[in-house]
Image 1 (cartoon, one colour):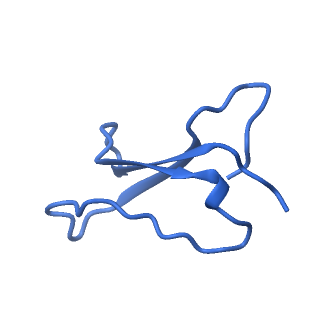
Image 2 (cartoon, rainbow, N blue to C red):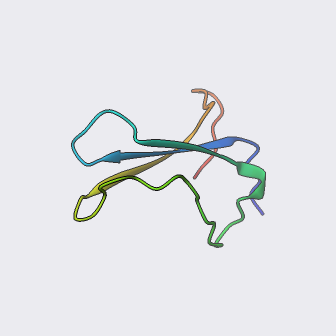
Length: 69
């Protein structure tokens, strides 16, 4: 079993935009292999018929040591 001791940052942006609309941090220790995990955030106003980009990253990744997401 792989253990992620990191904080995972989830960034939601409207496609083609640089400004994040939502940023959520998840505890990597609670994310298990091959499992679903709900990511909750405040609703985005006027989001109907828009396309969004979702980014996942190790919030504190270093070049020498990082976790897989």
